[in-house]
Amino acid sequence: MQEELFKKIVSHCKEYGFIYPSSEVYDGLNGVYDYGPMGVELKNNIKEYWWQGMVQLHENITGIDSAIFMHPLIWKASGHVDAFNDPLIDNKDSKKRFRADVLVETEIDKMIAKADKEVDKAAKRFGESFDEKMFRETNPRVLEYTQKAQDTETRLANALKTNDMADLKALIEELNIAEPDTGSRNWTEVRQFNLMFSTQMSNTGDDGKLYLRPETAQGIFVNFQNVQKTTRQKIPFGIAQIGKAFRNEIVARQFIFRMREFEQMEMQFFVRPGTEMDWYNTWKERRMAWHRSITPAEKLRFKDHDNLAHYANAAVDIQFEFPFGFKELEGIHSRTDFDLKSHSELSGKKLQFFDPELNEHYIPYVVETSVGCDRLFLSVLSNALIEESVPDAQGEDSSRTVLKIPPALAPVKCAVLPLLKNKEELVDKARSVFDKLKLHFLCQYDEKDAVGRRYRRQDAIGTPYCVTIDFQTLEDNTVTIRERDSMEQTRVSIDEVAGIVSEKTDLSSLLEKLV
Ligand code: ATP
Image 1 (cartoon, rainbow, N blue to C red):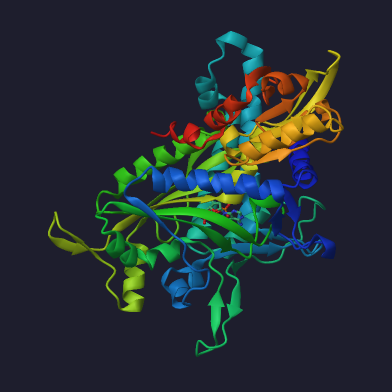
Image 2 (cartoon, protein in one colour; image 1 turned 90 degrees about the horizontal axis):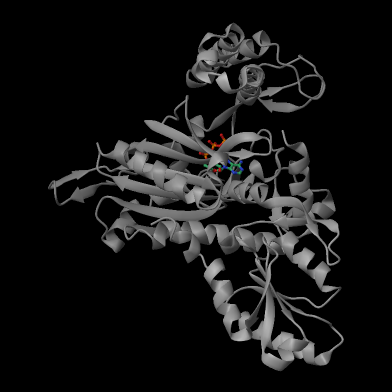
């Protein structure tokens, strides 16, 4: 694990106002975080890019913003009351709580890593002539590790599918899994734990129990007919939504990767039954293309689900290589007609579509894309945070911390810097440039410290352009514009600045990669 990078991301987020622990003055609240001034801008840009990629680029996708509180029967129909569980296990010595399935998955990762290590060693030994495929198929050690990983994966999937918590416990014992911090193997039994938070609404009759939604998708399902009627969409069509979701995660120890309050960006695509696998493949590709527009391809991969959820007939994750390994960033699920059918049954309202081409009513099938906004945020920062050595003003080697965020997602697009702060003419001119540019995008005005230090501050928050106002500006209305990644400075007329910055930082520069 690139522990150093991960630590740096966490401290960088705090230092530059991206993310703070929630309720910090009261020593924080586990698994909950607040976004600071830079963080909220980056997060809004990520959300806007997703929204435009869905709603603006597809004529047949529209958005909604449904409430977090919903009728409690929704969660009965969706299966969350009965089945939205994770297997929990406690260590009796350390008193720490773990997800039993994650303990086993970590063990599987170790087996795969051992096999990979053998392959790497052999590759070094044999050099050019190394045939990796053949080696993997014949080397006894590699075969042993790989087989063990596969067997364990199958057994885990079966235990989860059949709700066999005793076998999960047996698996942990057979694999001799120890508590990572203390080495203790003194485990409790495994039991299922429901992840929904509940609260109370005083006037709903019975006991007034409500749930905080654990996913935004159900708000889309129960509005399916409202949206279809008001937009007069024909199948296939989609509904997109961005909103908060809440899960009482058993373990929330990986910064914003696993939170108890987080944000989801989900799109449910309603299709004719029988066409769902085609649409599933289409959305797999479209979503991967979207991720690749902001993330290097080698850091992304598909991972099929071994253990399908109760509602799905196919499911795949898009994984990103976080500093702690490849992990789920987005899920793409073929959800069949499960949700609309259950809501029809429990509510007694027919949630159907009349297909004029077929001249018949049916319950549409659904392909869902579901991505966590906070995980995306973490992936963007993991790619972007770089320390590099660069020559300083005297040509000496020095280092800089720079966030190479895709310019269209950067919190601040342009910084305006007067060369000196005690020269009124420079300050006035810089202020007038700032006032013009702020009509187009988010700018920062900064006059404190030497220009070099101001550049570094902007590098650290990922600002793609810095514009410096100097004495020549007063004579000929030109400024220097410095580009973040190359650090190249060019002299341009003030009138050109807005155009140059917009061209690189407008979301259209990303959207055009998708069409
Ligand atoms: P995991 O297996 O990591 O718990 P999941 O399969 O339960 O995730 P989904 O129900 O498919 O996740 O949710 C869709 C997306 O929502 C995930 O791909 C992830 O990006 C995001 N997400 C889910 N749970 C959390 C969480 N606790 N904190 C932050 N993001 C989350």
